[in-house]
Image (cartoon, rainbow, N blue to C red; front, side):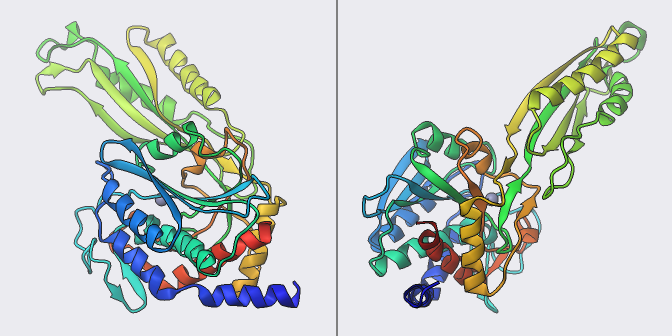
Length: 396
Ligand SMILES: [Zn+2]
């Protein structure tokens, strides 16, 4: 980099405001946006207010009653139609039954960490992205194209927010996508997808005193389940991701102790790697069911797909990956290697239909996601915001 660039880089890093990042994170954590049921509107209004105070263009978009996406824009100078999109979700998982050392909506600052539900996943990440835009705006820095921060609702359940964003043209002209999910400040270029199946065995109900008149679906499932559990879900080897997995996670059958059960179902959670087709996996389960039905034609078995999320990957040589690696090296002095993670994100919705180069990068310890005593280090918020403020300069 030239001296001029070095000086600008240093000025931007200095301009990232630690107190502002703490304030945004605290204000977001203090408002309950747990999902289910999904009550993101209040958090969206807080975000809108903060963005307006920072002088950024902001728009609230109603997705469903009481649920709003937010689009915040730092306009470019108009010389390039391409956009850089920062994306995060405003909903959090529920707080759980265990007691917390500090209240889950208190946002207490204790020994350099902000405590509370969503501090890691991912209100801290949203604060870092918004802090980056606010910093550039304060400094009067305009890039050739727009930098947009889109916060979406519903990621923890059904991704309705990112689906709405995609359906309403939110990915138009987006050349690069950065999802600010927690990554321990590592650069993530691939994540797994998810396919969820429910396999239902249907028999015939009867009085429990006359089991010979019925066909017991629970007993049938005890014979079918081992065949389903042995279905090979293996896909192509991926250099950053562990192999695809399949796990039966929920089972339910029967309705009363004195009735021979006519229904039993099992849910399977399958984590896929890039290149796998969901139809092919369903077909493998169907084949196992066909084998079962060869021996037991009296039991009707069917499969329902309850969730499909694509795996995501971006080639390590993509300019977006390079830009982030270089910026992270200049901010932290560390040259990081791209990684993969097993959880899925809104990128499952936004990236496959658009093929936009995508990375995940954000503050927060991934081991604390969805956990009691979730908390994020303030130093990590600062570092993330610095990287996110500098990345647009490396891209354009
Ligand atoms: Zn998340």
